Each structure stands twice: as C-alpha cells, then as structure tokens.
Length: 474
Image (tube, rainbow, N blue to C red):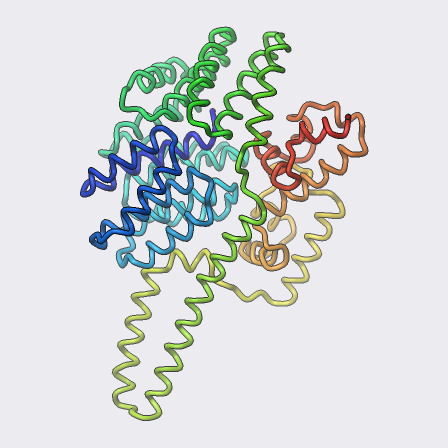
C-alpha cells in the first residue's frame, strides 16, 4: 500500500547507512540534504566533493550517492550515466552489485519492469543479504503491479526470511516486516511498526509520511474511516513539506477516496484540486527520456563492440610480422577478454544485440499488427511472456529487441502508449465514456493501476485524464 515511490526512496536511503562507513562526515552532510527533500542541494554538494581529490574508493562511493539522489529527482538518464561510469571503474563484480541495484531502481521508477527484473534477478545471484532483501522488496511490488500475486508473495517471503536470518539494517527489517504484514492483513502489527517509525527521531521525513499513510490504509481496511482520514491528513501535511508532487498526489488521492466513502463530496473535491495541481507539477518520465536511456545503453554496447573489434585487428597485424610473439599475446588477450567478460556479464546481458531470423521477425510483426488492429492491448495482465506464449514467439528477448528497434520503446511503454491513445480517442468521441470515474476508464483500457494510467496519459498528452475530460466538456 502507499506509493511505490515511497518504498523505492526508503530502501535506497537505507543503502547509505550500510555502504559508506569510511566517509561518515560526507555521508552525514548528504543525508542532511536528502532527509529534508533538498535533492538539488544534495547534488550540488556531491558534485563539489567529486571535483576534489579523493581516493578511488571514495570517488566510487560519491558516484553511488549522486546516482541515488538523481533518482529521487527523477533525473533518470543522468543517474544511469553516473552508475555506468562507476561500474567501469570497478573490477570486482560483487562491488558492482550496489550499482546494479540502482540501475534496477531506475528502470523500476520508469515502469520498465522487464528490464528492472533482469537487473534485480542478476543481483540476486550475489550473496549480499541487504541488497538482496531490498531487491526482493521491490520485485514484490513489481509482481503485484503485474497482478502476479504468487510471485509477489514469494519475493516478499524471501525478503522476510533474509531479514530474520541475517544481520541487516534494523530499519530495512522493519520495512520488510511492515510490507509482509500488510500482505497477510495483519493490520495491528502494521500499525505498531508504523507508530515506531513515526516516533523515531532519526527517521527521514519520507519515512514518517509513509508510516502515517500506512496506518491510514490499515484503518480503512478496518472500516475506521474517520480515524483513517486523520492519519491521511497528517501524512499530507508532512508530504507537502517535501515539495514532491508525486507524493502529494498519492496522499491527496487517499483523502479523495476516504471522503468519497463517507459521502463528503465537497471535501473530496477540495483535495481533488490539490491532486490535480500535484499532477501538473510532477516531472513525469516522458518518451523522450526513455529514448535517452535506450540510446545510452546502445551507445555503451557499441563502444564495447568497437573496442573488441580494435583488439582483434591489432592482434592480426602483429601476427603477420611476429608470429611467435603474437601467439603469446593472443593467449594474454584471450585471458584478458575472459576477465572482462566475467566482470561485465550482467551489463552485456541487458544490452547485447541478438540476431533474429527473417521468419521469426515476420511472425513477430504479424502478431503485433493483429494485436493492434484487434485491440487486444485492452486486455489486462499482458506481459512479454504471455504475449510470446500466445503468439508462439521463441524468445521474449526477440520481442523486446524488435520493439526497441522499430518503436524505440520497451514492451511496457509500447503497450501503455497503445492503451492511452485508445483512451484519448474514445474520450474525444464517447460522451458516456467521459462520465466514467478515472479508475473505471483505466480499467476499460487494460490498466491494472490508476497511477500507471495517469502517468502514461500525462506523459503522452501533457494533461491528466481528468484535465483532458474537463477541457473537452468546456
């Protein structure tokens, strides 16, 4: 419950307290800015430290901090650039894990869940309890948003098991316990955990906001509506202090729903204005920004291919002149290549270009054309896997590469664009459809989440569905 971004921010914040023991003063200053939501000043401070002369390990840690703060600011492209730059400086795969986690968070933030899952799954191969627990916590949210409750609960149970059997940060343990008890509907335990978070003077502002909203959620489930509203209003007061429009939007929506349930439409309308203002202020992730991420990955892959090509040409030239030396060099180069391949295996898997035969390409194209013309995208719970199984496509990666090459989008973005275009066109012509609640419109267009629908619609058309309907009616 609560905002997906709440959980992302929380687990990312915990990272700072467990990874950077050798730069305490710098870390405390960064946390001071971040805890109060001053992400711009945090970026400025970190960049000023990066301009100074530091040990390589400190530079890497600063880049990690910068990448996570950029995620909070929704500056995903720069966050990804910083993460990749840091990865290139690290030789140890295990040490790279914290950056793979951040990259997974980046794609999770922009709702490219397939790519996010790839990074988190690869991260789970390393024996890092804290990182694994965080990744599983977010994977649980991803699977839940895809309506895969079995996978979601399994991921949450794995995270809870790690929390119980490993020495990880107590705040992370509490957050996992909170999410787990919410899932199994143990609301009294959830309220107790949340109250501790609210009273903890070391808790970040965002943590207290989330705790207040969670208590409100529990009370709503227990039909204590008036009491739930009290907690939601306290959460909104704190959320406004963060100046984060996405969080303000989420909390105000909770109040809209609560007041509508008790029949106070005037109050609901008042919070609807706050909600709409927050949506208009939100720095939503756009298609252009996604293309920036995709272009960055392609550029990274291209540089690797060029580097390998140059290495091959150099070895061949030497062999024509000095065969004995070339044999020794070839052995060394092969060893070096093998080492590089092992170090960069995870990054390659996400960006490697694969060859697809013409028959498979034709099959994918036919399937997509039928998918569009028959409006099959209006069905809910569509995933890459289900699409491939239904259309007998050999590999999910074939489908992703085809869509990336042709449309410069992920499968998720391609699917959501089709749905919001349908919504946009139908709202323009269907007066009855305009009278539906926004949540009903989202469901009719195949969306499992109202937030995902609003974000996709705003990104595509520059207006929320509510504002678009208002402009038509006027």
